[in-house]
Length: 415
Image (cartoon, rainbow, N blue to C red; front, top):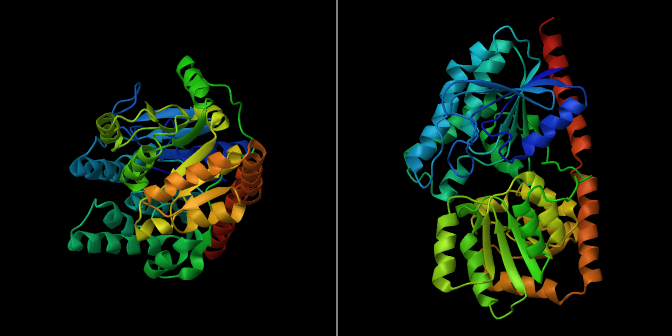
């Protein structure tokens, strides 16, 4: 089967679609990834790439086609809007030429924000007479309102209309959280085409050897004392102010430190606030490649996942959570809803309400009070839960079954 995978974000950016694409290739699937130029989350085009022009690469036997993309920049709603629009425009105007004469059996859209990246995929699926599958990672337009990116009611109504249009033209809608089912069904014309399909994780983790001297030094630092590691985007949705507030409450406990590994729109704020409060227990080392994460996780006393106290975020399961579970370390879940439910169901750590710094500090101290064997039990519980529910190999095979079923049905309709 020849798949076209449309995703504005792809390797070397760190997203779950990377491992899935690699696994599909290992399972013998042929494919093409249509993506933009890497610039997430810092908003600058990565070294070795340019915003303009097209580019072809190979990723584990899968061809990668890159179209022009305006980088998202930082702290600019206009630049972010232009970033979204540039990928959509390139998808309509340039992708058809890159794909001319190329047979496609099915089209898959990996759809974190913006969901609107599915618009050119609709056209490409029509052009190739292929079924369209949309894998929904964020709820639109709800997430736009929750993050404050769009406040205008008319603009939100327009986005909702476009989302209805996208869902109506999808042959299958995959949702990463069961809690997505009701809000997605509200906008989809046919709720029967919605299927639960969670983010996956490699349950056999790669070597935990740090990939660089800088990563090695950070790993050794994390291994000292009681270290709480947060990895990923440091933005508005992650409620980083709650983490800072909790760290301030725990500053008297010299062995407790927070390592916020990553970058994003709130990193400058975090640095300034850290300096203003004189916090020595918050370390901001910046962004590291995904290959460094296993070593960081293994060295951590606990792994932290957090989201803001917004109703929309209670529906989602943060994509980092599967990786945390597979790492076999205790988890602190400072969030509401589905993500907190997963941690509790797995018995893999402790949870507290989103946005509650006092409760987060108490959760950290609770884990700190446990013995090493007690924390190890929580980590082992998480690893087993990840293997049972989020195995990458199993979910990749499930996706192939979904796709083959759609292509067979379409072929029968046209014969």
